[in-house]
Length: 262
Image (cartoon, rainbow, N blue to C red; front, side):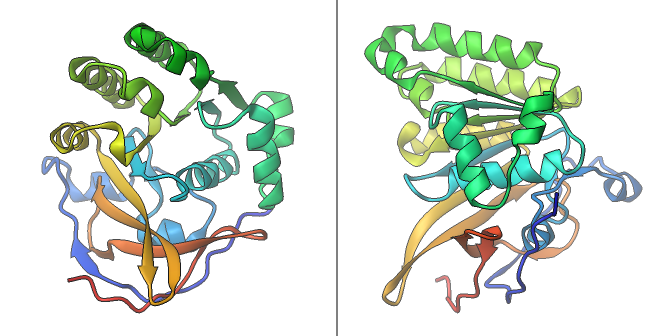
C-alpha cells in the first residue's frame, strides 16, 4: 500500500512551542517516536506526527475535518505496522471503511487480519438515555483500558461529554493520560460546543497535544484550517496554522492560503 504524499505550502504563521515538561533532555526528544499521518507535509508541521505515548485532543465544529484527520492518522499508523482501535459515535464501521477507500486509503485488509478494529457506539441510545451517560463513559474507559491496541481513536466523545458532569469527563481524560504514560497513544475528538471554555482549558492541560479544526472564510471561499495549539516535544519554530482540503487521491491535502492573523 502506498503512503500519501503531501504538497508543499508556505508557513502562514510562526510560533515557538515550548516543551511543557522541561525535564526532557535534548537527546530524549531526538529519539521520540511518532505516529505518522501518512502525509509528509502534515507530519512536517507536526514535527514528525502525533507523538507516540501521548493523549491528543482534536476539537472542532461540524464538517471541520475531524473524522478525516482521524482517518489520516489511522492510515499512517497502519502503514507503520501499528495496531489500531477506533471507537466511533459518528459513523458505522462500513462507512469508515468505505470513506477511507474513497480517499485511496483502503484499510480493509488490515481490518480482516485484525490489525485494525472499529467499534460502533450507538449515539442515538445515549441521546435517548442521557442519565446513563456517565455510566457509559465509564464503560468506554474500561474498554480503552482493556484493549491491547497501540493506538486508540475516539470519534467523537461529544455525545457523552454533553450529558456527563465535569468531574466525570476530567476523570476520563486523566485516566487516559495515565494509559499514555504506560505507552498507549490516544486521540480523542470533540465538538467545540461540548464543554464550557473553562473546562476546555482544564482538558488541554491534561492532554499533551491539542489541535483545533475550524472552517473559515478567506475571500469568497470557505476553507478548513487546523491550529496546533499545543504540541508535545516541539523543539523548533514551526507553523502553527495550516489549511487543507479533502482530496479523493491524497486524503488531506495541504493548500496554500495567504492570510494574516490579527
